[in-house]
Image (cartoon, rainbow, N blue to C red; front, top):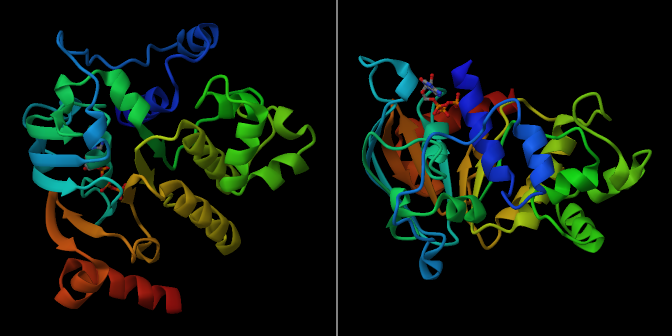
Length: 300
Ligand code: ATP
């Protein structure tokens, strides 16, 4: 239960702006308090605007608090730096720790040892609001509230005009789909609402990110396969969304990350290889193996 809940709760916290209508906030949050136990340090400050987009892990060791005292850490000394505007991809076998890396950046959990620097400062010294405001996540789990599509989009930017919603939806390749629904942007979705496909939900999530306009984007690629047409449409929308932002992509399909500035191969809680696609493909290591596997299964 905890395993399922934590990432979801964290995601919702980032997805939602705290300035969202207080009443709505209370309604959604009355069942569970989604705010993590982590509190702002007494002297917490906002992120340094001049360095926004830079992310660094410095020898990060992390063990899930609920994994038991004798459990081995999930991350065992991870160090890397991503410069503003770069597209970084994390690949590796299931359970390697890729998602865990991405969830430590918005401080859903605190490191066991080591440091995570966001715009040059340890995340534990920053106001969490500053992390929430500067990080956007598009994950496999797009949470839609039982509300209209317009309302679902406005969670990302309260007070956004109708024109802004349409602009974001167009850039996310979902506008035409929305206007084809019975009530257009007023179509009620979510729990017992109009059912959206996985690809449609993802594009709503992308439109939200575009409205929010964060400096850092985390993309947790869906493992469930979309058909190739929706996959193309979603991929185009993701390319639009990542332009000009530091993007951290957790990739399962290597075809989506061949043009990444840097690829980190994670295995057993460590970064075992790093470099561009060309470098890693030529190195003949773990990445080259994964790539060969995917190319041959795609051709089969
Ligand atoms: P995948 O490609 O399957 O998504 P991943 O590389 O993203 O895998 P993580 O989700 O980061 O891997 O998980 C790394 C390890 O941490 C796994 O062994 C997983 O079982 C464990 N883990 C993940 N979340 C929790 C949690 N909330 N509590 C305890 N252990 C967890």
